[in-house]
Image (cartoon, rainbow, N blue to C red; front, side):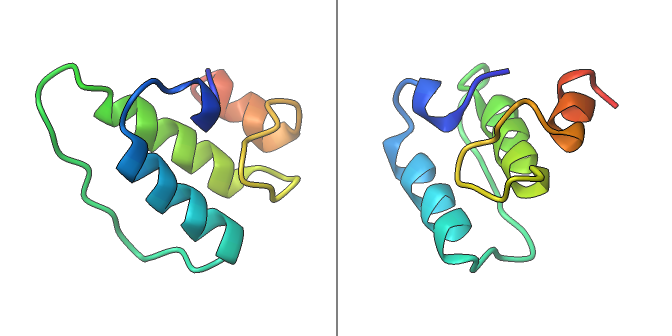
Length: 74
């Protein structure tokens, strides 16, 4: 799985979610909409992984227990 920096385009949603992570002001819900195959689910998975990451940074580390579980689909 990639990180936010690897997502091409979608600058507005990446900026919004990145700001939410960096400031710690995460809303209780987000609606991500768009055309079919636009990467909505992918962005949601990266965001969820970043929220659960044990290092607590803006980008998921992909090395901690939570990230490894997310990468394995658990």
